[in-house]
Length: 601
Image 1 (cartoon, rainbow, N blue to C red):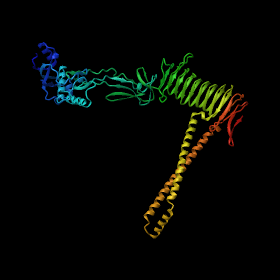
Image 2 (cartoon, rainbow, N blue to C red; image 1 turned 60 degrees about the horizontal axis):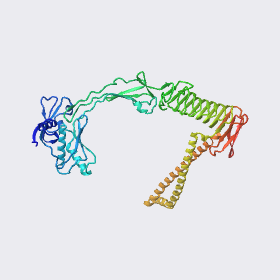
Image 3 (cartoon, rainbow, N blue to C red; image 1 turned 90 degrees about the vertical axis):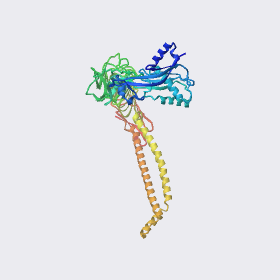
Image 4 (cartoon, rainbow, N blue to C red; image 1 turned 180 degrees about the vertical axis):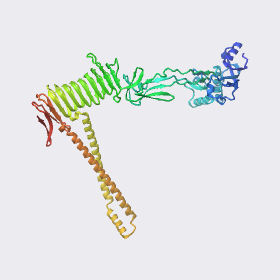
């Protein structure tokens, strides 16, 4: 049988092991009660250990000193060592977990624990936790975590929700966790601005493109066992490594970092170790294997020149996307390639499954694909499709054009040309061509017509409703003020006689004037709406006359195998002719209520 003893200890677990060995018992058969404890510290200027009154270290010293490696901390415990005996009511099953520095500790309470909501349970739980803290070599009492409050919060949870259904983490200790150092680093912000797999990263003026983040020293810590936690020095690898072109990149510095911003639009390039904003890129070919897609955006001032011209290899490979402001391609554009640019020059040919969108001018040698542009200049159009404002083609062999104005030097066979204003051809050397004036074929014209029609319908409906409202208000006004002349006459007579007019008569006349003015304003508003509606209808009718202002011009002789068609944009009626002689111009003219084609040499 173990005889209890009292002992002064600085390491409870070590003393328990020693006594268990001396008495020939297992350490698990021993337990202890904490009677009292004392905390001592030795500061940076102290020759002797100082006794801590209470538990608040910060009343005697500072956080800076506590974190210092020169600061020392220890505790002495008066304990009563006895045989282990289970608590009659509390069965608190838990373990203690700490972070790797031992600067924070939590008790992880098993849901299988038995926790009675009896008087004194808070004290029992605290005693159990303190005993296990001391077994783990952790100090007690001096931490920022308020153990009593955490235990109360835990008990309140059980009181409200019942027994635990999952392990509960109860904070029991936290001293001063270390603050790790921050190593210096370089952030390539321009990569984040463009998260596609593009070969280049386009930037705007004042975009943040690079950043050098300064290294920061950490702070030493103090563990819950009283030991000092040493934090290493930060690693400095990149100081002075970022070199930029001052003509195109500007720098701003503060205590945190040096930030580098683009001074102009373009793409970020590193040339001979120097970061700069370039605006022209030259490559041999663009393919998934060599470059991937190049999508900087048409809003950045970037010119791409693809200079290699090889018969057996596309300059822009199959499926590659190009999105730049200016593109100059010496060779061919492959199938399913997509091009978006402001200006495009293609020195060879385009595949029939390629798609090219150009906001300004496109200049192509041989076009077989799909092109949308403001202006298209094509040497040879062969089965391809072109939609533009103005199209100029030297030789057209099949294919389709939809444009406001079209100019063709030589037209061969099986082509369809649709225009809003004019088609002008120097020579036709084939047959099966359709020359069509169809305003609705142009998206801009069609959208304008449809928007006008919707606007007119809405304003017409609104005007009809307001007109009915005006009539109703006029009738109501007339009925309400049918006796207004009598009231006005009485006011005149009162004025002549120098007597005070009836207050009711004054009010009625004032109401009449106010309502009359409101009615006039409403009527004027309706008149303005009618005038606006009339102007819209006039604008619509002018647009419907687009076919009457269009012309088809041919400077050669028709062979009787090419068809000219004018389509009325309002009625969609076709007016067609197949000339078989020299006809320079073909127009649609109005004769009374009808229209007819006019052929002139």
